[in-house]
Amino acid sequence: MRKLEITDPEIMRLAIQDEIMRSEESRYDHRLHGVLLVSQGFSCAKVADLLGHSPRTVQYWVKRFEESGFAGLQETERPGRPKSLDEKTISAVASDLRKSTETFGYRQNLWDGKLLSHHLATRYGVDLGVRQCQRLFHRLGFRRRKPRPVIARSDAEAQRRYKKTAADG
Image (cartoon, rainbow, N blue to C red; front, side):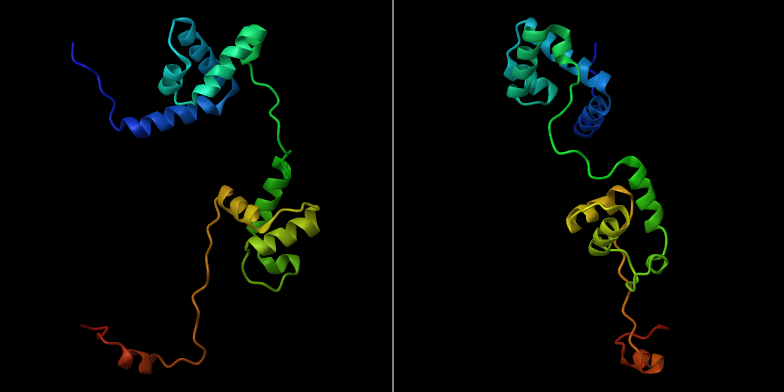
């Protein structure tokens, strides 16, 4: 029988890992598979290599399984700082960004990280740094667009004569 091969295995591996991390159930199943492989005699390092994790992560899974059984592999509350923006506020901000800055009384023409940080503080009472605001732009699908500078009172005919190559040829 011919060996089956996956086209673009590296891209597919990343896509599959992303899909596994997408839901709590699939992450639980993923941990179960890791513990199953260890119970079949594979080392934590080998299982980590196969599943794309660090050996220490697999060791944590096995330890939690030993201490709490299947419940030890379930998703738990993760430590860390709580989110500054909830989904409702994020959708409201996305709506704000689709409006002109002048709608909110700002003199600046375009939204940028600094203006969004100010807007979040004044309108929603959320203190978010400029860099986090830039990340929020990216997350919401906005791209940075700078207007091209327009030279005041430029002479189109003088510009045409100045160019090295003729526009018509």
